[in-house]
Image (tube, rainbow, N blue to C red; front, side):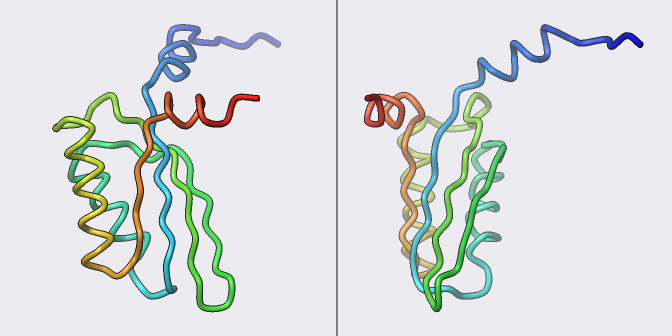
Length: 105
Protein backbone atom coordinates (compact mmCIF):
# COMPACT_ATOMS: atom_id res chain seq x y z
CA UNK A 1 0.00 0.00 0.00
CA UNK A 2 1.35 3.42 -0.90
CA UNK A 3 0.16 6.88 -0.05
CA UNK A 4 0.49 9.98 -2.15
CA UNK A 5 1.28 12.80 0.24
CA UNK A 6 1.38 16.37 -1.01
CA UNK A 7 4.30 17.73 1.01
CA UNK A 8 3.72 21.22 -0.36
CA UNK A 9 0.15 21.20 0.98
CA UNK A 10 1.39 20.11 4.41
CA UNK A 11 4.08 22.80 4.40
CA UNK A 12 1.58 25.49 3.36
CA UNK A 13 -0.80 24.40 6.12
CA UNK A 14 1.86 24.68 8.80
CA UNK A 15 3.14 28.02 7.55
CA UNK A 16 -0.20 29.83 7.76
CA UNK A 17 -0.34 32.91 9.99
CA UNK A 18 -2.88 32.41 12.75
CA UNK A 19 -4.69 34.27 15.50
CA UNK A 20 -6.42 33.12 18.67
CA UNK A 21 -9.90 34.49 19.33
CA UNK A 22 -11.51 34.21 22.76
CA UNK A 23 -15.19 34.85 23.43
CA UNK A 24 -16.71 35.00 26.91
CA UNK A 25 -20.02 36.12 28.35
CA UNK A 26 -23.53 35.09 29.29
CA UNK A 27 -24.77 32.29 27.03
CA UNK A 28 -27.34 33.19 24.40
CA UNK A 29 -28.32 32.24 20.88
CA UNK A 30 -26.05 33.43 18.08
CA UNK A 31 -22.64 33.88 19.72
CA UNK A 32 -20.85 31.43 17.42
CA UNK A 33 -22.80 32.72 14.40
CA UNK A 34 -21.85 36.33 15.14
CA UNK A 35 -18.18 35.51 15.62
CA UNK A 36 -18.05 33.26 12.55
CA UNK A 37 -19.78 35.89 10.41
CA UNK A 38 -17.22 38.50 11.45
CA UNK A 39 -14.37 36.13 10.62
CA UNK A 40 -15.87 35.52 7.17
CA UNK A 41 -16.45 39.25 6.64
CA UNK A 42 -12.74 39.96 7.19
CA UNK A 43 -11.45 36.88 5.32
CA UNK A 44 -10.26 34.83 8.33
CA UNK A 45 -10.51 31.05 7.98
CA UNK A 46 -11.63 29.17 11.10
CA UNK A 47 -9.47 26.07 11.60
CA UNK A 48 -10.44 25.00 15.12
CA UNK A 49 -13.08 25.81 17.73
CA UNK A 50 -13.45 24.79 21.36
CA UNK A 51 -16.47 26.02 23.27
CA UNK A 52 -18.25 25.23 26.47
CA UNK A 53 -21.21 26.43 28.46
CA UNK A 54 -20.95 26.38 32.26
CA UNK A 55 -24.38 27.05 33.71
CA UNK A 56 -25.25 30.38 32.07
CA UNK A 57 -21.69 31.31 31.04
CA UNK A 58 -20.27 30.81 27.55
CA UNK A 59 -16.56 30.45 26.72
CA UNK A 60 -14.99 29.81 23.33
CA UNK A 61 -11.53 29.73 21.80
CA UNK A 62 -11.12 29.84 18.04
CA UNK A 63 -7.97 29.38 15.99
CA UNK A 64 -8.15 31.24 12.68
CA UNK A 65 -5.86 31.65 9.70
CA UNK A 66 -5.34 35.32 8.93
CA UNK A 67 -3.17 35.17 5.79
CA UNK A 68 -6.05 36.26 3.58
CA UNK A 69 -7.46 39.10 5.71
CA UNK A 70 -8.99 41.83 3.57
CA UNK A 71 -7.94 44.44 6.13
CA UNK A 72 -5.06 44.92 8.56
CA UNK A 73 -4.88 42.91 11.77
CA UNK A 74 -5.79 45.86 14.03
CA UNK A 75 -9.01 46.52 12.08
CA UNK A 76 -9.87 42.79 12.20
CA UNK A 77 -9.39 42.70 15.98
CA UNK A 78 -11.35 45.93 16.47
CA UNK A 79 -14.19 44.70 14.26
CA UNK A 80 -14.55 41.55 16.33
CA UNK A 81 -14.37 43.52 19.58
CA UNK A 82 -17.16 45.85 18.39
CA UNK A 83 -19.31 42.92 17.25
CA UNK A 84 -18.88 41.41 20.70
CA UNK A 85 -19.88 44.63 22.44
CA UNK A 86 -22.97 44.90 20.24
CA UNK A 87 -24.00 41.33 21.09
CA UNK A 88 -23.13 41.51 24.80
CA UNK A 89 -20.02 39.32 24.89
CA UNK A 90 -16.30 40.00 25.16
CA UNK A 91 -14.34 39.07 22.01
CA UNK A 92 -10.57 39.38 22.01
CA UNK A 93 -8.13 38.60 19.20
CA UNK A 94 -4.46 37.82 19.76
CA UNK A 95 -1.91 37.24 17.01
CA UNK A 96 -0.38 33.77 17.22
CA UNK A 97 3.14 35.20 17.68
CA UNK A 98 2.05 37.13 20.78
CA UNK A 99 0.12 34.14 22.13
CA UNK A 100 3.12 31.82 21.68
CA UNK A 101 5.53 34.32 23.25
CA UNK A 102 3.28 34.74 26.29
CA UNK A 103 3.03 30.98 26.82
CA UNK A 104 6.68 29.97 26.41
CA UNK A 105 8.16 28.24 29.39
